[in-house]
Length: 137
Image 1 (tube, rainbow, N blue to C red):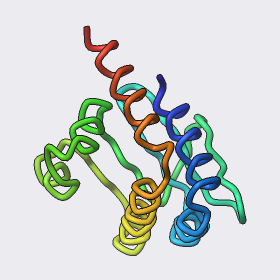
Image 2 (cartoon, helix red, strand yellow; image 1 turned 90 degrees about the vertical axis):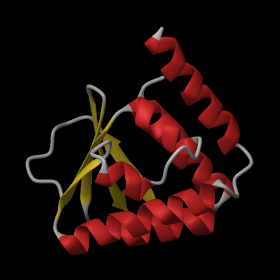
Image 3 (cartoon, rainbow, N blue to C red; image 1 turned 45 degrees about the vertical axis):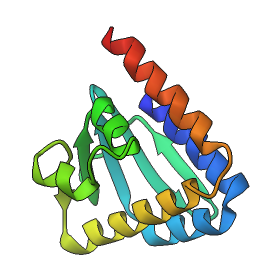
Image 4 (tube, rainbow, N blue to C red; image 1 turned 180 degrees about the vertical axis):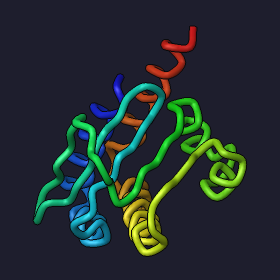
């Protein structure tokens, strides 16, 4: 399963099952565009009012750029290490102005807090984990 597809599905679930968190997540994003690179895939994310805009077009100067691998995402989801550890050891690379990075962190924290309250998230994470395992074999 592509990262973009997983992200779209997870944001849809967040909107349905934890709408307060979804709204706070969009508010934390503000008008920033974030470019997320996972393996060889790039996804751009932007909050637009009450919805998300997710694409694959390259953005010339995103507010935040994040780079990681799907294997690292699985390790984070499994609680093998914390996001801070992944950043410090280079498994996750972030680039942006401090205020934009803080806003991204707030949005990500709000997303995760909503995810643990949404009943459908465990199934989404299991599907993502299986797809990562299938690709590595």
